[in-house]
Length: 114
Figure (tube, rainbow, N blue to C red):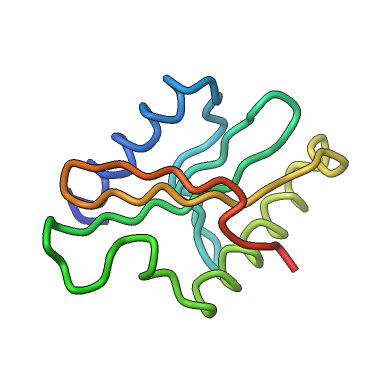
């Protein structure tokens, strides 16, 4: 991961923690995909994709997540849940933290996990 990507993930994690979420894991990798942040929001598990774009980029951070990327995040989530059975019955959601320049946008329920 690039230094810029690591800084964006750290910034997103701190932002979400300030908003009441608890970080369970950062930067989870497996053969089917990766998850930037795995967090808890009260009783919900939250799988977070962090996207960062420089100010004035042609495509904003939120719009840069393709259907293929969403599919890989869902597959990685299934893998993580298979390794953490204590969380198997908890409700979950997929959020995106989009960082465009200095602006942070937190999109809850950004996509479905189907």
